[in-house]
Amino acid sequence: MEPESLAVCLLHAYQNPVHERRIRDIALALRPTLKVSLSSEIMPEYREYERASTTVMNAYLAPVVDAYLGRLQHVAGQKPLLLALKSGNFGAPDFFLKAFAQ
Image 1 (tube, rainbow, N blue to C red):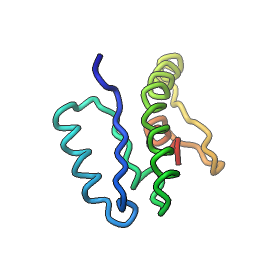
Image 2: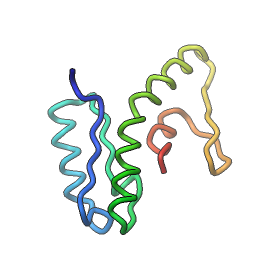
Image 3: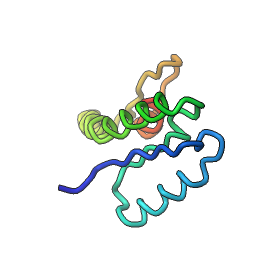
Image 4: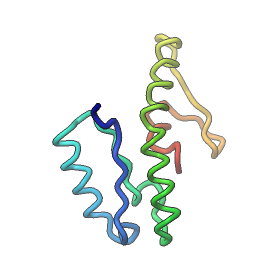
């Protein structure tokens, strides 16, 4: 069984995300279909536990949500699929996948 997603949470990445981004780049070079969640993008805050748990949850749910949105898009066909965001705005599925845990 191959991994579908990866959660990356380094200790001080909320201040300097360079190393998390480098890990993402290496992981995607090795496995381009991998969904990588970076704590510095998901929840760039000081507390490690909250940042790590949110990032892990994002990585866990990303493949499930991606499959679900793929099925919705298939049902919608050629019609544009827009999803309601917590801000009250609407976004395309690609935007939603990037922001659903934030």
